[in-house]
Image 1: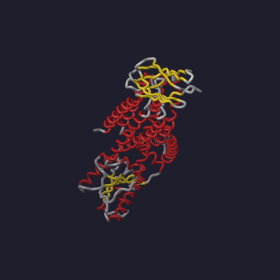
Image 2: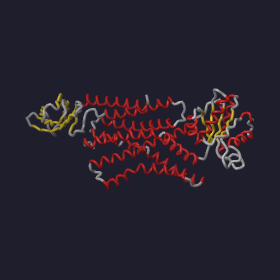
Image 3: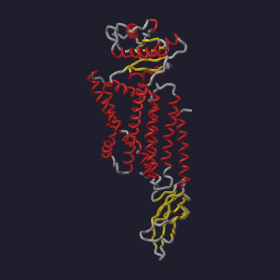
Image 4: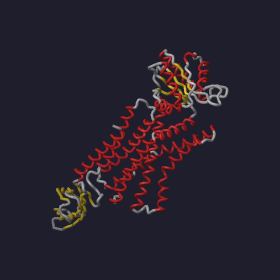
Length: 486
């Protein structure tokens, strides 16, 4: 059974249980009515404007007020004329209106007014977010490797749900005070904007950091579109949070945003913005967390093979600084393994020959390895690959021929570890990754590329999640419009 289907099934069960709980608990409204000022009430009487809609099952008299237990009997509305008498027979009369919904819920004053059991609505929302957290944690536990874009998506949904969970707990605390239904309803609709503003300080600092880093990257590496990613994303995060005010001004020129229809259209557009923005922000944070985890994770030893991913070499066949860093990282790992376990590792330099290169990248790496004292018999060349996917695919064939059961690790640049691991996983190679350090301004831009790659590779799942939330909000707003809640 797919995870999404399980979540829908559990959510449906919680929804039905919530309706049942509201029917049972909300069928009786405990209405506290204040006594007339200065009157010492001796007894209370009441009459119904329409019989059979509600009944007063109990009256509890206090010093300054009385609590009436109003029980719903059948769908409809009625007014309750409540009369207070003192010892001298003086009378004061109040008129209260009550509504009984089709499923037995009793509300006061308006159709979507105060009712008993308001806390079941935030409890339902809490159960949904806990369900999302639980199933996505279980999904993460089942993953055999961290090198999967679905890992990032699962983590982002957990983060998204956790923040909303805190918000719903705050709402739950208020609902024990008999909030009206429209207030709770409004809180659910606006929970997404609350999320965006809650994490805005972090996102604002991140945006500034991305913009500053990209400016430095452009100065060092030159002007290219890929070097503008940080600036574009930073502007998107900042402008997205404040775009609702701009949208409001445009809508105000086109429709009456103060009228029922215009108000609901405004809420719907704002919800789409905040849902999309909040979801993307969670994906961004998840990418950062995964990157930090991979960067700090120590790979297990011993390994049989270390695969070195090639990149550009100089015209004379020597290594560029980026590639040299990858090879040095592999040498560092090999040395540590040999010191701790006594086991030598086999090096697999991987990379074909480009049109402007005098030798293959694999051969250039091999030459450097031998200069560092690695014997030729400890090196297996893979010099046919032209892409990262081919790096892993062709190297895997070499390792499969050499050994039936083996363990492997690959060495690349730190910003490239996660994406390389994803590609290795896709070709069936279960390998850990290690990364050589690159300049921080380059690393942040690379993280954005990983974020975009995640969006592309998991696009169908992202679209399903965002559309599900938007359809849910649209359904609530359509119901709200015709029921005149907001």
